[in-house]
Structures are given as C-alpha cells and as structure tokens.
Image 1 (spheres, rainbow, N blue to C red):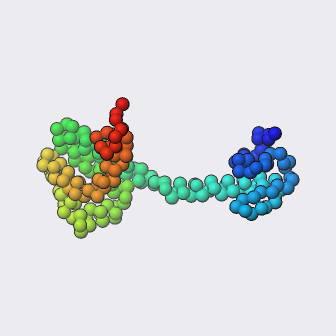
Image 2: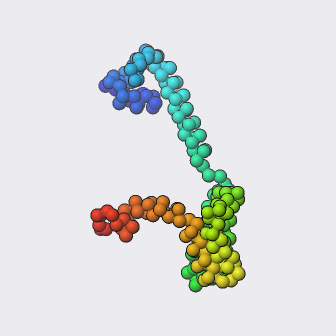
Image 3: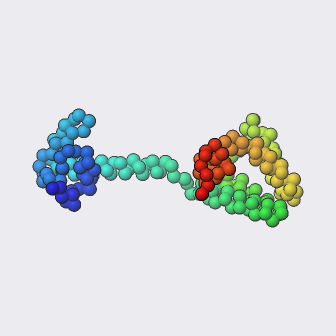
Length: 194
C-alpha cells in the first residue's frame, strides 16, 4: 500500500508514470528511474533535492516569460486614457454630438494611443505613405470637432477611422464570429439560440 501523504510533493506525479511506487522506498535508499530509455540510480535524498531545483528552475522560466509579456505602467495609463477617450466619444455622440465631450474624447484617445505604443510609433502609424489620405481625414475630423463643427467632424473622422483601421476589421470580426452567443455574426453555423 502506498502512503502518499509521506511522499514529497514533487514525487507525486511520478507515481502515475512509474509502475512501482516510490513512496515505499525509504529516504536514502537507491531508486532506479527510467526516462526515455535511460536508467539512472540515485538515492531518494538526491531525488528530493533535484526535483526541488527543477521546480525552482521551471518557476524562474515562467516568471521570465511573465516579465517579457507584462505591460509597463505607461502602457497601463495609456489603456486608461484610451478607455476614457472612447467613453467620452460615445457619451458625446449620445448627447447629440456635444462638441466639448467629443473634443475631450478625441484628445484622450490620441494621448492614450501615444502612451500605449509610444510617440514614435504613433507618428509612424499615422504618417505612413499608404495611410496618408486616411490620416488626413481622421486628424482633419478631429480638427473640425475641435473647431466646433461636431457633426461634420465626426463624419470625416469616422471615414478616416475606417480607412486607417480597415486592416484590423477582419481580425475583430473573426473574433466576434467565434463567439457563439452572437448569432447574427455566426451565420455559417446551424446552432440555434435557446
């Protein structure tokens, strides 16, 4: 009978891999392990320390990956600014194109975009040769909103937005169509809403 409660936590997954139980071997005795055709004899004391260092190595690799994928504080501020900008744009449209809210939303959106991807990348995104016409409409629409022409400015800005970000729309619609709860986007499937 195997006493798993006395077994070191790192050795418990090996019980399912091995035909014999490691818990029955006393600490300090020789244990034969076979991985990928290689046989190794080690004392169970060394086995405990080797698995501990292996576990620590795996956790250090995970934390290195997390560090590489983490966002900076500046990018967090940018996400907040962009979110508030979109909120003010939406709220300005709901209040019959209030020019102050739309202008504030546009400024926050552009500032948030600059904080997220950086000033240089933002400038290079807007002023690429193939996107110059779209950027002119988008930034011209923002200028019209700032000069208190909100309806015409939002129309011009929306046209520029569609031209600028049209390469992102298939990705967004592909993501939305993969959601099963949105039935009108998921026309190809035969699932029904219940």
